[in-house]
Image 1 (spheres, rainbow, N blue to C red):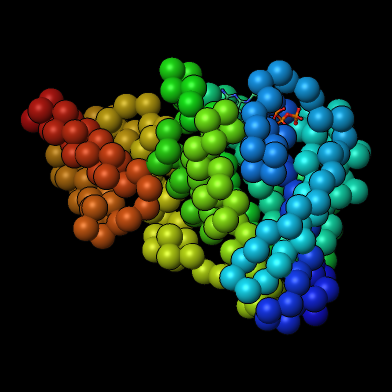
Image 2: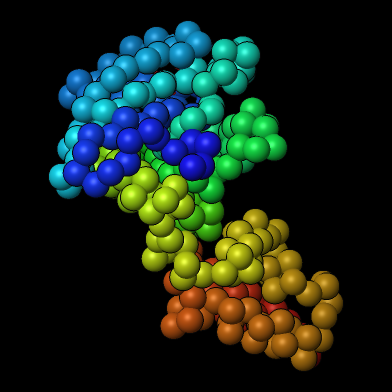
Length: 273
Ligand SMILES: Nc1nc2c(ncn2[C@@H]2O[C@H](COP(=O)(O)OP(=O)(O)OP(=O)(O)O)[C@@H](O)[C@H]2O)c(=O)[nH]1
């Protein structure tokens, strides 16, 4: 049996699972859990000290699921406390604040912390991850858009939800899908079920969309040196167009990336003899 498989897994029987929350301080981890479990929102920030623990029961199909939730403090100060709690986990709620780019950029570091604490025998493939792009009610401050977050999550085979603990948007849907995926995983011998989205685009497509988003000018976007010839620009354009054409590529953000590439080519060709 896999190390992080729960003890009882016969269909129709009750199941006990462990879920943890991860993400920078103040992104809303505790509020997301409270919104689902207690149906309320706490606007005052009370930093989690170390770990908060709670138990809840949910029904998935014909199974009663007893969920042990460990809400982790996001502050770096609590690293020593957190690292005791990563093992034997079936589900992770990975949260960032859509108005704080740092909290999105930190997601890789959170995965690295977990991987390091699980050690060489820990297997992250057996865990269901759901990414919550939280505080979507704060539209004015939003700086990480949906396609950027979704691309990050789905290229790793993680679930992705846009949430607001304040309004409740996306919260029930997120937990429902999360718990169903964990039960599916338990009934699938501890293997994460392949989602449609994770199977439908390649790493090259995801990396190219990210590169285009971060490019500094049209040359950079097409991946050619400044001063490249018409032929070089057209060749680079054709390669990207085949990779990202909306008929062929369903990765989040591909349509915008494709349009940006078309515009970059047009702008460059105007000035090349
Ligand atoms: N506008 C808005 N504010 C939110 C939302 N979720 C949480 N907050 C606020 O963000 C602050 C931090 O929320 P917490 O849930 O305590 O954050 P946390 O990630 O658990 O923080 P740590 O315990 O320090 O790791 C609080 O003031 C919340 O009221 C949301 O969806 N929208």
